Image 1 (cartoon, helix red, strand yellow):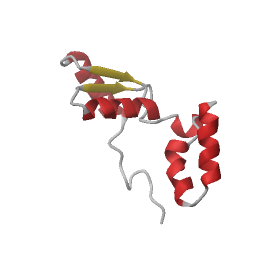
Image 2 (tube, one colour):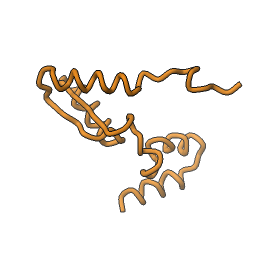
Image 3 (cartoon, rainbow, N blue to C red):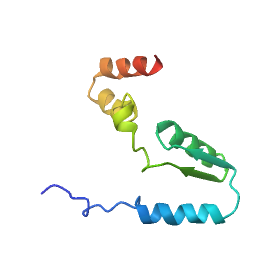
Image 4 (cartoon, rainbow, N blue to C red):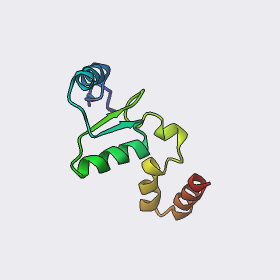
Length: 99
């Protein structure tokens, strides 16, 4: 039996996003506002939070919504490529992203 969306409910949902956006609008000032939660935005938010800054991160969609479709997929597939010995695929992805 394969898992269904109900099997592993996500805490990332429209109700939570609406509530947290309202809290951000009416809440205290934050040190860093990250707009866009693809790989770069998520990384910037993590880095700022790790440095002790207060961070608000927003996106038009869910976290990493477009990453799988629009990027080289190195964030999602890079480790898998490396783990399975597909170094050529990981290298090609990195080179293409640099272009």
